[in-house]
Image (cartoon, rainbow, N blue to C red; front, top):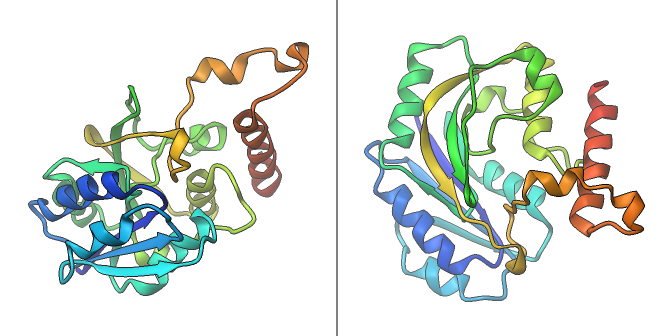
Length: 233
C-alpha cells in the first residue's frame, strides 16, 4: 500500500528540518511527503527548498491548522496517511511498525502509540471505546487507513484529533495500540505552532475565584463543550 506523510506547518522552520530528517530516515520509506506551509513568515521556504525533490511543498495564506491539515490530505494519494505536525520527530521504525500492525489487523482503522510531548511522556493504552468517550488518549500522529478517515471538522477549534477518533468510533471504526514510544513532539507556545502543551494542573486551578482565565484555558473549555455537544457526551 502507498503511505503518505502529511506535514502542516506554521512558524516552525527549524523544527521542520528535524521533522523531515526523521521522516526521511524511516526504515519504511514513505511514498510521498506533503508539506503545507500555512502562511509562515519565518524561513520555512528556505528550509523546504533544501528538500526539493524529496517532498511536495505547498504554500498557502494563513488559514489555520484545520485547513492546513485538510490541504495536506486532499493533495495526498496514500492508502495509509499519517498527520505529522512539524514539531514531531519520529523514531526510525515508527512507520514500519505502524504499518505492520495494520497489515496484521485488517479490521482496525488506525494504529497509535505512546509518545513524548514537551517535557512529559504520554503512555497510552489499548483501545477502549468507553474510555474514548471520556477522554482523548490518542495523538494526531497515528497511521490511518484513508478510506476510514472522516476529515477534520472546521467547526471544531480544539480537540480536533479527539473529534476524528470519536467520529470514526460512531461509524464502528476502531484503533490498535502499539505499546512503545514511537515519536516525540516539541512545543513552543511563543511561536504559535500547531502543537502546544500546558501542564495539567493549569486546567484544574479555580480560575473563577481568580477573576480571569488564560486564553488557552478559555479555548480548552469552549473546545470541550463543542466536543461534548457534537458527540452527545
